[in-house]
Length: 182
Picture 1 (cartoon, helix red, strand yellow):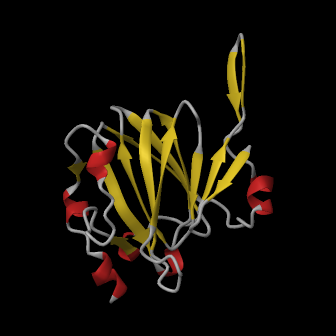
Picture 2 (cartoon, one colour; picture 1 turned 30 degrees about the vertical axis):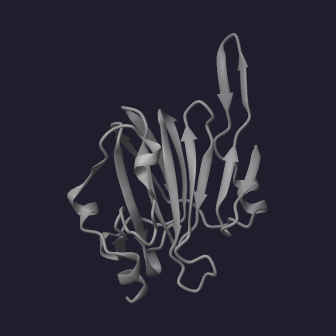
């Protein structure tokens, strides 16, 4: 598996090797030994999957405190632009974000550590998004940052040629400035 790191510490892309023959193909999607060698020792305790239509934006979500989650995310059908926003208040890259295109064809994955806000924009209908979490979902510790916060400037329109659909809950997110002052 190929490993790519980014300028924001803790973010990692994994690109698996895929073996194809006359029967089909095989891909290893997870390897604990590789994760441990990269210092990722927290076990995954919950797997989630969502299916989204083209133009659906989910996020920017974060769980705080004892239920903070690291996530290993991938797409098993379709494609997304995935976003990780550094919300670690003591980080030198606080408020900065990294995007990465995840596709079912490539099979690449993105590790988003605890302390990051996470979001994705579906680029195709019926995109299936899969993610492993290092902690269980706890709605009482969830924070949602506004998708269109000017301080973040995600500029989603540059990624897609259709209307963007956002849930009512996500529309009520707080600004990065409000989060900073919590």
